Image (cartoon, rainbow, N blue to C red; front, side, top):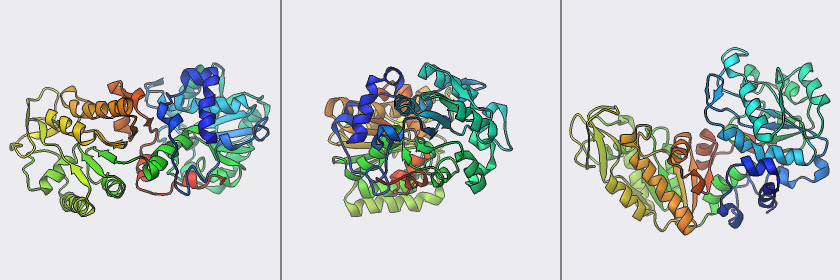
Amino acid sequence: MKLINAIIALAALPAAAAFAPSTPAALSTRTFSASPVALDAKKSIGDLADDELKGKKVLVRCDVNVPLDGKKITDDTRIRSSIPTIEYLKSKGAIVTVCSHLGRPKDGPEDKFSLAPCAERMGELLGQEVTLAPDCIGDEVAKIVGDAKEGDVIMLENTRFYKEETKNESGFVEKLAAPFDMFVNDAFGTAHRAHASTEGVTKFLTPSVSGFLLAKELEYLDGAIATGERPMAAIVGGSKVSSKITVLDALLDKCEKIVIGGGMVFTFLKAKGLNVGTSLVEDDYVETAKEVMAKAEKLGKEILLPSDIIIADAFSAEANIQVVAADAIPDGWMGLDNGPASTAEQKEFLSDCKTLIMNGPMGVFEIEAFSKGTFGIVDILADLTKEKGAVTIIGGGDSVAATELSGRAGDMSHISTGGGASLELLEGKVLPGVAALADK
């Protein structure tokens, strides 16, 4: 595939080699067929000829919505993930202008949401100055872009300083697109939103294509799930059934095996008639949990719930804790993590799986006493990748954070940069930011 060759070729670029996210061996040895609105039907920058890029003013929608402590970036993963696409465009002689949102400014520009720290960090990663424009539209922006030379990189100020961005207002869209020749969407994390900078500009800029990061996300999250090797398993965790029920239902149709963990487990245990003490339960979803288990049985799919639970007498790092069987949670105690027997059972349950998707942690991993279940499942997936060549895909903010904390992120096949977008793609929904791109 041209996309695969283009990504591998990035290793020859010094900055890309130094700062690009790790590319697992699985990427160069496996190919997947994606759905009709994804990779196999949409153009990427790897599909464009050199003369289609040289000298062109390219607007690149990245997702540099990074966490900040004041003006200090605490996790630059999203910025690093954007570097291969920018380096590739630069190497082809394009003039690159990055746009993105940061946070949720309420009413116009706010200094705490300025992209200045992002421009500075991107410049460090690229080894060159990244000029921060004072705005994302207007004459001054047009002059900065117009005066730029091939290989220059510019970053527009936060697009969400304008309410018209999220409203996809046509007049704003036209102003945003005005200085540019073409558009590249490399922001998977916002591809599920039809905003001005993700969907609107495609109506004014031709061609509009995907960057390497967006294409890779589609290849794994869409292609691997649609046509990946089987048996296929999903590990679904997090606090609430209500936030995962649609993706859980969709994955039941696609996967042979499902592991359920996290706070949502207790709604399922209650649905089985078990006492859950003071554990988190969504009473309105107890019947839904029963329906999920009934559907799995009807389809011949296996659902694994934890057999033992780490419980505490308070939601606190200083609480008294003990390990009990899942059917023996006493009154006044709450479940906060899987027990060791559950992790051992998960290892056996998943041992023959060739494709595995994780979305949601197994426990309150931010507190060390309740982190063993989450880090245990992360180790299981990482070992399956390294030792058996399984394809492992981690999606969702908490799952990604836990995987990074575990130190095993580099052993996974793919770490997704999109939270809501990952969920919607797993559910089978069309992402507006993808659907708007040019067809091959």
